[in-house]
Every structure is written in structure tokens, then in C-alpha cells.
Length: 262
Image 1 (spheres, rainbow, N blue to C red):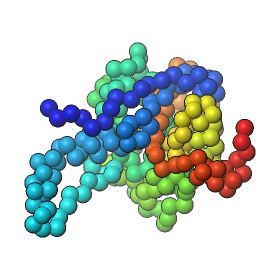
Image 2: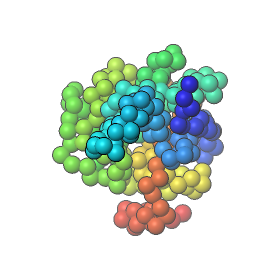
Image 3: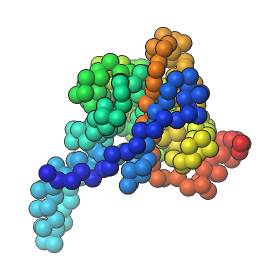
Image 4: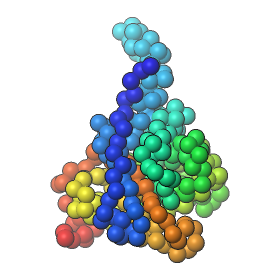
């Protein structure tokens, strides 16, 4: 059996975020993957399954110009690879979480998590699907009841920038308890700053979008509206990671959105 390309990432309880949320918050630290992102799960799995074809193509490349395209999110093998994250949660946690928070771009992570929840028997675990105002292709689709193509991507969370969410992601989101929520770029960047202070980890705004579910009381608002259990015992936030950020870029965003240093 081929060695998987991703690593099993830590699941860590966060005291600062738990204090804010009013329940135990666990962080699934996908930012500790070798690539700095969860994406190696799905794309790595897809590459391993298409290996024979890729190998044959590599052998022929000297003779002709050809390549193999692996879609970053709209591919059943990518979703299958992302399911491994849920299996790790199942093996690590003592019981199922009250909710899972994740960011949505094209929907590859959402597909993998929903399919993984079904596979481990956690079908009733709700998902809080976070997007920014300028990348809300899932939110728009859920509101319209059909796939929607955004006219443009207008957000600093560029890795969430899919103008249209994958059809499979939209379909699964209508079948599973998924709550699409939207935050501003400022809230996403603010979450990046606060997370750096709280957990000493630097992540990009796409990840800050998910973290904003805690920092901006999105979870509490869903509880107050009756969409989430009032007595949540735990929430898992998938820290999707991303290496597309530097301290210098973060300072530029802080100035842009008027975020003061604490």
C-alpha cells in the first residue's frame, strides 16, 4: 500500500477560544501539514490514485507535450482524500463534536467532511460553513436554491475565491445540517491577528474566516436563533492553514482595515 502524502495533524483544545465560545473548542491543526494546508489530503490522494496514468505520461513527456490536471476541489478523489480528516477526529475524540466549523472556497473540504461524517456515523453533526462577503458562492447558492456564479471575487481571502461552488458541495449542503455564514474581510483578518496572539500561529485570511466563527460570536448567534443546540459541549474548528501570508502582508491588511495592535 502506498504511503499517504499527508500527515495526521494534532487536535488541540484551545483555552482562549473555549472561553470566548462558552464551550470546549478543539482546533484541528491542518496548518501543520507539510504544505501548510489541508489540501494535501485530497489532492495527494487523487495523485496517488491516478499514479499509473501519471507515471505513463511522465515516461512519454520526453516524446510529446502532455500533462495531467488534478482539480483543486471538484473531484471525487479529492473529496475522498479529505475524508481522512474526519476519521482522525473519530479516532481522537471521546465522542462526537457538537458542531464543526470550516471555511468554504470551492467546497472540496466541505464535501470531504460531510462524506466523512456519514462514513463514521456522525451524520447529525452540524457544519458551520464560513465564507467572506467577497467569496460567498455557497451562501448565494443556498439562498437561491441553485448554483450561483459570482460576478467577481472581491476579498483578501483569495484562496476561497471560487466564483461557483462545486455542484456536489451544494447538493450535500442541502442534505446535511449545514449553516452557511458570512463575515467581512476585516473580521477574517482580525481573527488572524487574534489567533496569532492566542495560539502563536500565523494563518491566512481563508483560515481566519473559519476562526471568525468563534471570535465574532457566530456560533453563539446560531445558538440564540435555535439553529444550534444551546448546550453545545464542544466545537471543532478546522484550522485549514495556508502559507500565503507574511507578517508584512498582515500589517498591510491591518492598516487597510483599521485593525489596531493589541
